[in-house]
Image 1: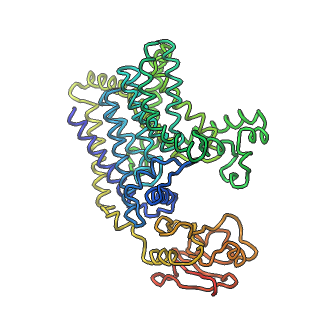
Image 2: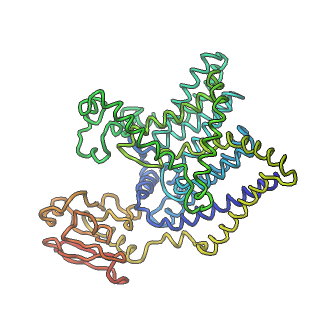
Image 3: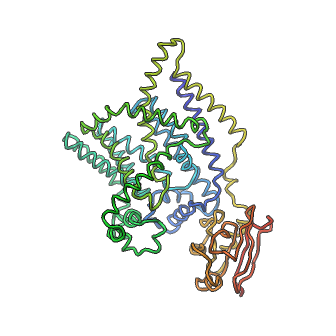
Length: 532
């Protein structure tokens, strides 16, 4: 049975690896929210600049190790994400085994590997790429620190500090640990001797962020999202709202004290189904996708059956149980509130490995009871082995079909921009003055050799006189493509055509066409410039 477990695990991991690698080669547009991280990485490499204030520095600093203005930097960054995803699966299997046994750990790793949010993070450029691994390592090591050797707290604190260096939400790990530790130490005072281990790990890593914030911003704990954006009604209100009104006092002025419970409970109502949806399998794993409701029902039933064990641990003020309860509760409260401002599934992906392991740990005893019942009825049949073998066989068949249909592409080749876009980027870099460039999924910014060259079009409708608007801002050139043409700002000036084409309806006054894409008809790009 042990060999069957590892064979099945190898099949499931291979299926995840091929699927994530294929998605990675399909992700060919760094401008889809991924560009900024390479821009930050280049700033760190070339100028020693750190991302502070909202984005945290760890992820860009890692990317700076191979950052360049070539497409290879984008490819290497995606391959790094793939490696982090593989490390998260290994951590779920390795640390999970120490906590709840091999069966629960392997089941949790399999469920994580087919999760659609985890799969998306494993092939893209997002700071959240690091969080599932760091959160799981911090939680699992803290669990062992509470129940076993206090030195595990050193690793737990270090992982929490690295998570805080990645995103502001990483601080929740330390806050949840502190709350759990204080309650557990109130009952068991010997725990106080273990606290320095966690503090050493956390302060030794997160302390760098506090020092940098204090040195640059004058506020060690400043973060725009938690200090200001948290009190907005929508992220889009940020530009038009004075910073002083982006505060708790500003929220009270708009909504009053009753606005707090109203916002929180309405957020819980809308956020809960979003969080549950983040635990769903990806359509790229059809067997698990079709079985998602039976899997959800089995997890819910198993967790319900385990409620007394969990409650007894909480009543004993067991630190591991308290920490495990406080962490998702804090996440749920925070993102229920924040959901109205900026809804996104990736924000809660960090907890998925922990939640899968807890569900698997509750489910495995039920599965063993079912197996014992089945053996009593049919002694010659091992139901568990048959189920695992059948699932692995179906997965292996699906894997073979994916290889035959998808093939295996070279991402370094796939990520190279089309010649027309490469020419447009080179033309943009050669211009004097600012260039109207994007926003567009096909126009990347990190590849431009000069900072401050590209200016994106604003939201909203068209200006009364586009030529005058351009002159006022010192914009003397423009790159127009199909995606830019869809923006309301260019209504009456550009038209987006099928097959990625663009058409100039009316040139701005005092402007002319400087070139166009000759490889496609209709052209994918048109270059415009101000008359001399």
